[in-house]
Image (cartoon, rainbow, N blue to C red; front, top):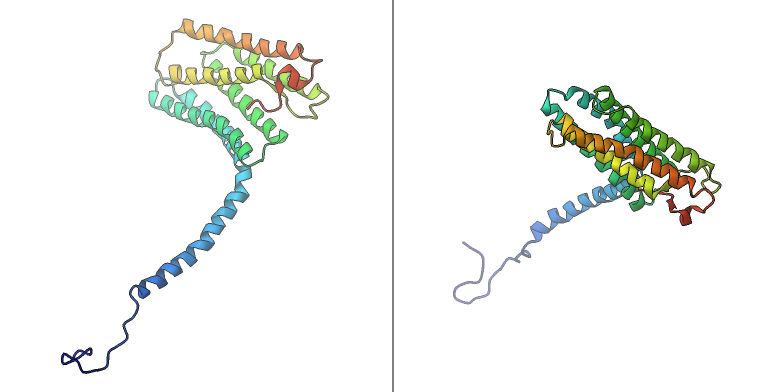
Amino acid sequence: MRLGAPANGATGFQPVAQPRGLCHLVPIDLRVCRLQPATDYNVHMLQRLGPHSANALTAGRILLTPVFMALICAAPGTPAVGWLAVIVFAAIAASDVIDGRLARRWGSASSGGRTFDHLADIGFILAALWTYTRLGLVPWWLPAAIATSFGFYVVDSWSRPLARGSLIGSRVGHAGGVCNYVLIGVLVCNDSAAIRALSDATLHVLFCLVPVYSGLAIITRLGTRSIPAPVAGLIPDPD
């Protein structure tokens, strides 16, 4: 017999009803309690590793450099390998753009980090162009012009009284660095991936531009030796 109010209106025993949904509140609360420590741990690890993310990307660029060299060496006659080289180049170029922004985002920008970034850049550029020189696609004087300009950039920066051992970039030099990346991008797409969109004559014109802007970077530095860096257009972080 079901317990409850009798049909004839007489009083009787009625069980106390449990609040609706109470049985569902406990597992939800326990779930929140379990997630909270995990969330705090993730935030802690992000704050701990975030300041090192820029240097990690730069180190990744260094590790990918020999991979890129091996791919462009194996690319002739194998377009699939050439397209893989395009993907690796895109990752390297993206890391060069992102690492500076990460350093500023986490407040970890420093002269040591900038030097590390510049060395990774010039190492990749010279290694890639040297490989293309060995393949007979690029003249030897092209990487030589870039190496000469970068060497002067280092010597000139360290010889300035206000440099304090750090590298002082210039807007012309920064533009030249971007052009160097663009040139490698053209080579990996046009030759390694066998797109063949540009003729040899067009490529030769691009090659001739390299010593022009490399020499211009040297000339602008020579003309600003007696001028303070900010006034001369030199900037501590060209990224």
